Length: 356
Ligand code: BGC
Image 1 (cartoon, helix red, strand yellow):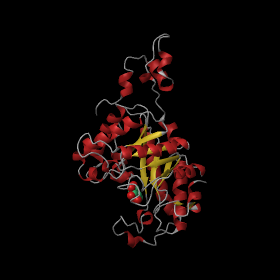
Image 2 (cartoon, helix red, strand yellow):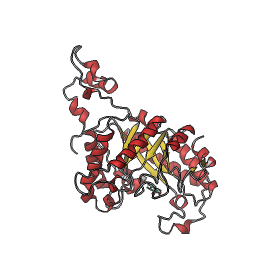
Image 3 (spheres, protein in one colour):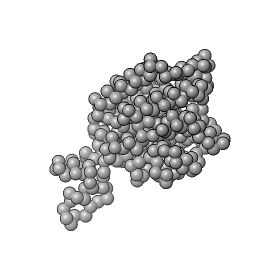
Image 4 (cartoon, helix red, strand yellow):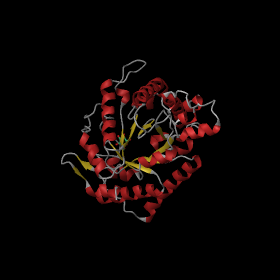
């Protein structure tokens, strides 16, 4: 991979003690007394393990900005949602965004300023309510069928996003791509993520990155993921919807899922063990790689029975917490929703299963 560490380049000539101090304090503390300090040297690199605590209880604001156009799937973000989310105890929001559908047709793939401003507005709402925020690239469908053709655009998106939001507080996180799959396989994904990190770090040294696996963000691809060695400010993420026949029963976008209707999750020891073992695998891998973990999506669709949904959601959330994973429930106000936007009310039992 290219040498991407802006910070390492920047501080190449510095003595080791000064460099270490820089990780905690501003460079100005190492400068000669009367030497002017350039603002570009005011670099503070957050500790990703500390950062991950900000994401402890996250809600996915799904089906809004990653729809072809906001509102197409029935969800339009409102300022009051952020207030309510904060009020009940969530610490962060994950905001999926379909950037790829809102750019100019050719290089440099200029992002539509209307979408850019809308995302900025959502980040303002998060900041105003002291919520951390994750933005990602979501539903970039073309990259999954023809990754090499789309690579230039993928990198152009990150360049513009990093330039636009560089001055936002470090409570903003960048997640590189939602659920790589199909032709964007694990091997190619390692290469794409290296280049995306290079692109972001050439502009922005401070915001914490969130890096997931290929194969739809699942654990199955974890051992194939190569985390770039030089990148120390990142969090590992995976998605968990197992047993899939339970969480996705009757899901309109999953062929054959009507046959699974009626599948329950009873919280039997044997059912719990499957989840615990999966999480143990993640925990072990993350320890080996010295990286914190975000369970970036989990949830059971509304066609499953509510009692089972509550049991499963509670067990998954508590298991994540025990393993020191932060978590992000999928999602706020639609098919998996814990909030009913028609009557402006939380679905209390599900909310309690999450936030106890
Ligand atoms: C997808 C959603 C889907 C959810 C659960 C998300 O990553 O973007 O469309 O509802 O996973 O399947």
